[in-house]
Length: 118
Image (cartoon, rainbow, N blue to C red; front, side, top):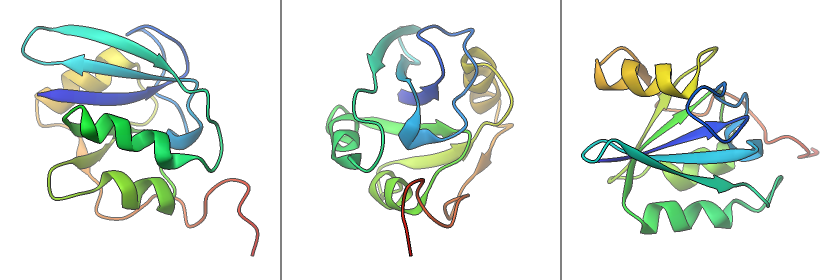
């Protein structure tokens, strides 16, 4: 199974990012091989199209600190689920998910995306 975690830095000891779409990095963790890849988030802001590539790679689980409506709508699909992982490291988030200790999200934790004006 592939898990994508939003991260402040580029390793497993990094804190989970406070906002998924505005994370500095995304860490792709493979539960079968226990290996990970790091992707720099070069498209901060409202360019959530880059999230589609992770769905195309087969990511089934997204671990987030918070998530706005646009990103949530993109990644909460019939094939992928979103779980809340606040105030912990990436490594802790993975362990807690695998132990069934994280809450699945059924709606975004933020009403609006950062930078969205109404």
